[in-house]
Image (cartoon, rainbow, N blue to C red; front, side, top):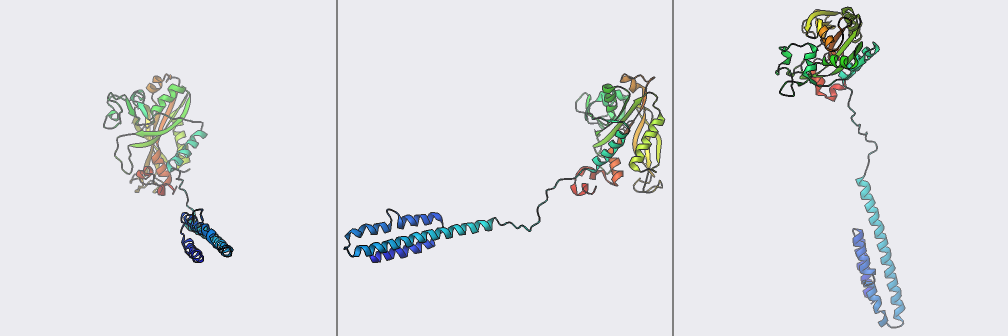
Length: 341
Ligand code: PHE
């Protein structure tokens, strides 16, 4: 029996110290110390021993039991420690490493230019209005006194949304002149920025979608002098106090007389350079006195009221303001580009 107990102690200790995980350790505990375990099996045979051997063997059996119990406990601790070490290794955090910045984008320079523009007009008592990009041709053309054979009405120039040419993507923000007068009447002083659409190929100065800012002033006694004074004041706010302007006669169906307004090239002082394509001047807007037919069509008496309207190109303005030479950069939305402004 003594040899048996020695053998159990040795085998069991070896096995316990080699246990690789809790489940294996538990199985060993059952195998050696359990109610049907090997040690219990030996103890059951104690009855057959002589009276003087019994306490000796009993003591030895108890020693083996507590040795094994201790070994199991110790191995459990070792396993727990190893598990902790493995976890720590896995979850190592290098607190000296620089953190990850979350990218938050950047305000678009065109909207910075638009905000500055709005501010100038709001300070002059204008209201800012919003209008539909999907528009009726009645508003985009008819009510703006546009003749039936005007080239802008062609399907090759304009995006129509139905077969009878009644619904389209607006080609200009001018329909907002009509909507503003129909909705709010006169006197009125408003600007209306927004997207417009034309069937143009993309290049450095064209895009099938771009932005305009419409403006309309109607009141009693408004003259061409008001048009010039207002637009000169705005242009000097945007392009600098000593900017030279030039008002050229032009034609728009909905204004009479009409003009285009140029700004003298700041880079060459009017001599001609690549920025102004050798012209010395850069066109910045179209404008004119609101046509009497347009006023009458909106229920405004042209004998009592008069007004002026204008349309700025927003991209062109932002490009001049931030010295951007290609319109495609404005629409590509590459944050590395946008972040420079
Ligand atoms: N709508 C015209 C254009 O797109 C610009 C304009 C607006 C001209 C208002 C006169 C008055 O070219």
